[in-house]
Amino acid sequence: MWLILYLRALFAFYKFILLKELKYINKYFSKYKWRILIGLLITILSKLLALKVPQIVGDSLNVVEDYQDGVIKDIAIVKDELLFNVLIIIGVALLSGFFTFLMRQTIIVTSRLIEFDLKNEIYQQYQRLSLNFYKKNRTGDLMNRISEDVSKVRMYVGPAIMYSMNMIVLFAVGFTQMISIDVKLTLYTLIPFPLLSISIFVLSKVIHKRSTIVQQYLSKLTTFNQEFFSGINVVKSYGIEKLIISDFDEIANESKEKNINLHKANALFGPLMILLIGISNLLVIYIGGQQYINGEIQIGTIIEFMLYVNILTWPVAVVGWVTSMVQQAEASQLRINEFLKQVPEIQNNNTDTSTINGNIDFKNVTFIYDDTNITALKDISFSVKSGETMAILGKTGSGKSTIIELIARLYDIDNGKILLDKTNINQVNLNDLRSQIGFVPQDPFLFSDTISNNIKFGKEDATEDEITTAAKNADVHKNIIDFPKGYDTILGERGVTLSGGQKQRVSIARAIIKKPKILIFDDCLSAVDTETEEKILSNLERISKNITTFIISHRVSSAKNADKIIVLDDGKITQQGTHNQLITEEGYYKELYDQQLLEKEI
Ligand code: ADP
Ligand code: MG
Image: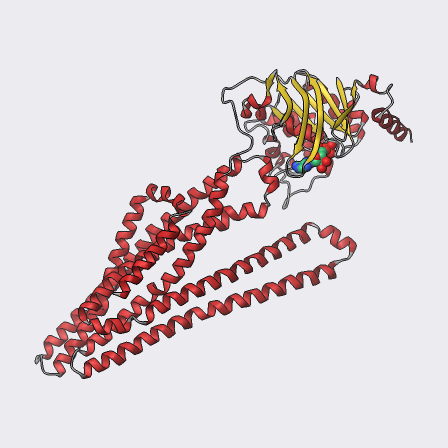
């Protein structure tokens, strides 16, 4: 009776925790329902077969006993019976093994399929979310969600469900068989079982807690090493290897302690199980022995019970383990759900395709970064016509990059208006807008791939001709063909390291190959010398007749040919005009001009 109660309580507990976050996974269960159903059927079959063995062994022993007691007189019958039983045991074991294999093949494979789907779902959400989300969350956390958390949920989908099913079948069938043979013996034998599952549950929680800590230390170590390896230049040139080593030692030592702690808990797992099986076996022998002496049961029954105990131990231990696994999966799914529920800040409000000409108007735009509360732009107004070039100058932190980010609609504004071809920018099809912007960021990012692929990133179907033309216009073609592998040179970690100026020029080639309507250079000419700058700018003038171009710079030389120049200071426009106007006016531009003229003469 208490056993049924115990199972009931267990189910209530499962239901209680399943209902909340992990409900999200149910849609996948129904997607793969046939696989899962077949898996469960196979599980039942394999366990039914496994439970046959103790019965046959018991029967065999009873036959021998009957012969000794003279109940059976003919030895030939005994021999036939034993041979027959041996063959059945072999057959059953083989079949049961085969079904167990199939069970893993169906259920575990399904869990991998669901894992794959879930990862894709999360990945798509990553693509949808806006820049702000990435600034607010740490990369490590984001990576964890797609790897650690999903794998915890997979444990629930696969092993947890498989073992639960295992346990239910083994228990239902095993228990019935045992009860039908001997009620008293059954009850005594099963006394330690609830104890077993509870203690495994507690132990699993401890193990989980400790292994989380071990994980944290592992990522600490990795981060430390990553930084050390990427900063190896600094470490070597400052001669601080000893310091780094002692820091590393400290983390490594702590990590070791935590690992030892974890394995202390892990080491308890086996002995605990053996102890409790042992107690059960003792009870079978003691109680069964008394019953045998009283003539209530045969010797085979004792052996049969001992075999049952051994078969049932694992599923009972698993109850505790599975419960803790489901709890972890629930916590992970909670994190995943929170993340999937996030609505991207920047919404596409218009799905009609629109042609973009590149007329841009800022009308009294004020912008505050909501994470830092910094007012980056204050009452900015300007207007650029399609095909014009505008230069933006100003000290670092004056808001230049912010203007650019707003043109690409990486953020939405609360005050003022940004118009693109007379339409409010948030009503322009976002995909069209982004596809018509060629952006060269302040610190260019190149992928660990070939140079040609890095340029093609701006235009998937670019021909070789287009790639070289873009590279020539960015004045980087000559550098590229100097590499032994030319455009097929691999960049990045295991490839060639480009200089800052070369990187920027590859990045420029990437932007112009796209033939965008709006071209943006965010301070990207700063790392090239004035001569190269001049070349790129004159190429640009040639190819950007119909392109609205923004050039952010610290140098007057980049700005002087622009149709319009604005000077920013602390988020405000302080000067506005053409080169010729601004050099006659007292202010930042003239100061910069005089200073750079002087430098040139020297
Ligand atoms: P510039 O490009 O002229 O150097 P920015 O536009 O990058 O200037 O920055 C303008 C101001 O906004 C600075 O005070 C900077 O600290 C702040 N800022 C820039 N980017 C962010 C951001 N993502 N979150 C919060 N504050 C920012
Ligand atoms: Mg900037």
